[in-house]
Image (spheres, rainbow, N blue to C red):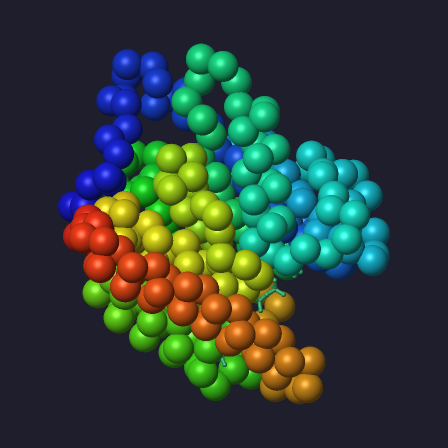
Length: 265
Ligand SMILES: O=c1ccn([C@@H]2O[C@H](COP(=O)(O)OP(=O)(O)O[C@H]3O[C@H](CO)[C@@H](O)[C@H](O)[C@H]3O)[C@@H](O)[C@H]2O)c(=O)[nH]1
Ligand SMILES: O=C(O)[C@H](O)COP(=O)(O)O
């Protein structure tokens, strides 16, 4: 059984029982699905805050999310998913209560709809100190048109830099401790955020697990829009990876030792 880098307080001494979870939802133009996603996320055990970061939507995402019971903050213009995650984490920190452990952060996408509650299995391994980072493994998605090019590139890069071969390196549904989140900042930009976070945390000795979750999202199809989206994903993943390759080479020259990665699946 893996053990997280940072031990959690023992059960029964009060602290772990007080550990709450904030769901953070970066959302751009998600008015069709955000209400169902928010309502479903509110049903996840230990969640006492559902925060939607409206990333400069041009539709009614912010009002629909608020009406569904979320706390909503908004970027006045679109800044990309990673920036929305950083905004969300900063707002959660402002709302963490003194005397309580900082909330765990559960990042989920805005398009999960009624299946958002099925990210609940990501919380237990982090809350119980089995892992610092729990990443959702999704079942095959109907209508998905990818050929595995971006996924394959991210997977190979993570393996080359950490020794771990993740099954779904781009999966954005992930729960982590506040400490691990801070260790992963500044986040890689845009669509490189998951790949960068996984590399950074494993290199620092944090423990990652992948957990199957029965989720359904709006998968990109094979049309022009889908291909453009994949091209942007590929660009951002490669920027994140190359920055970390360079940093790794610098650290090697300066004699900085990364902790041996703790990897479980
Ligand atoms: O500028 C943007 C674009 C998207 N989003 C939100 O980010 C989430 C993920 O976007 P989506 O369009 O659903 O992306 P996917 O193609 O489904 O992305 C997959 O791959 C991404 C990495 O490339 C991960 O971030 C996602 O979690 C994963 O589902 C959604 O809630 C979006 O509303 C933003 O907040 N800002
Ligand atoms: O559809 C997906 O899984 C992502 O957009 C990545 O695309 P890929 O299948 O080309 O890796």
